[in-house]
Each structure stands twice: as structure tokens, then as C-alpha cells.
Image 1: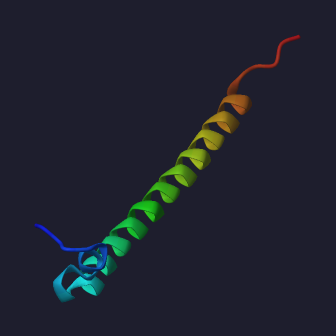
Image 2: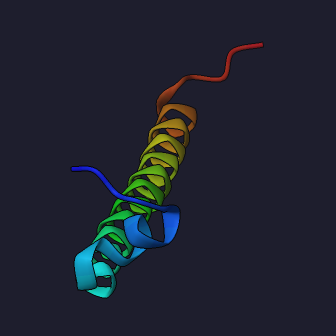
Length: 60
């Protein structure tokens, strides 16, 4: 596609609100997914570390 100006690009032929709203919603979902994955990973690693501490014998 060829736009005559940046304003025309952002307007997307009158569908700019729909297009950019959709892009924003997808980006919001991706960020939420990445944050959720990071929190889950952190919790899982913490649980594993705690389990290993409880199972390992403490010998001096």
C-alpha cells in the first residue's frame, strides 16, 4: 500500500481505530503472556530450589 502522508498511514483509510486498536490489544496480550510466564518460571524455580534444600542431606 502507498500512503501520501504519515497522517494517512495512521488513519489507515478510515480504519485506523480498528487497526491500531487491534495491534494494541495483541501487544497487551503478548506482554501479559510474557509476564505470566516469567512469574510462573520464577515460582517453579523457587519450588524446585526449596525441594532440593529439603531433600539434600546436610553433612558437615
